[in-house]
Length: 369
View 1 (cartoon, one colour):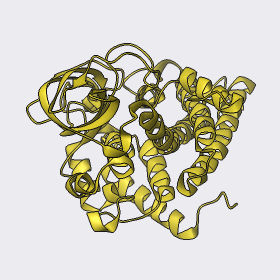
View 2 (tube, helix red, strand yellow):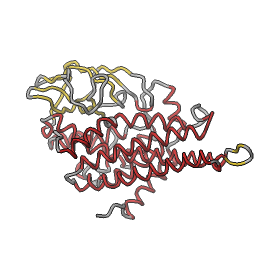
View 3 (cartoon, helix red, strand yellow):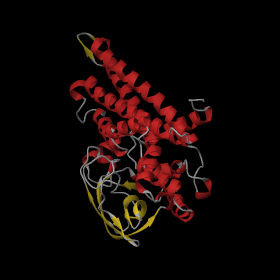
View 4 (tube, helix red, strand yellow):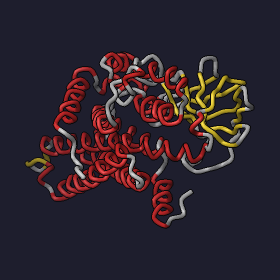
């Protein structure tokens, strides 16, 4: 088992990093945090689509690049490092992944080329109010065989989305559906990271199609989460690494009592703790990437480990980065709070730490559904 990436994969990652360095910056993220607009950087999204990055794992027959999940994970890490304000996770990790995993040939031929060309934004609509994303609960959204009715909230990237994967009650039980959101009512919701455009989506006899491979809805949804949280973990890791770099750079620059604050033991300990947590998260993420690409039978355990360690690393790094920066750390003068906001967002959209701890315990105990 080789838990490192190939030279070609690292070269692709480096090229994407250079692309984001040229075209992504935190200025627009700041604007989005203050403005209740579409919730993403349209210009950056168009550039990413033009370069073909949206179709990284989509087969060539559907207009994608036909690369592996490993390349997707490396791209995800750079997106997290750059704090890119684009609906990549909702569209690629969740929407496109669900279509590829559970959709019919006709559904793949319809939706995947649109994703690859950047002509649609996708999202995942599961929650119907407060509660953990992954926990089973009664659903009020229903599909009567011809149309869907109900409301989903909050939906990340729901303001910009053109289509959604929706978990709803159907004629034969809970299932996953693909819904064209044209004409659906939506309203903007406040969120900690306004660069993700949270929304409440209301379906009033909306046209929907069942994903034939996801007729057992909760099981299919759990499989989708297992697959999606692996690139999410890499995105969280990228943000955590960037937060550490920011903290180290500031600790070398800021002086107190005649010397850089990085020379004080309290700051050294903070930076060392972040580094250790990031390295632990990286080892889990690499193993999960291997399990995802190889469709290993222990993917759920690997995904849970990656998810839990990535949440811990991103939360620690973003929080302590603010602390190292001191008084300006939580102000608009610094970028620290932008990474804190993103860490909080990513910690929830794939299920909370509590949910994944329960999943991991159930897997180990042999009591998982």
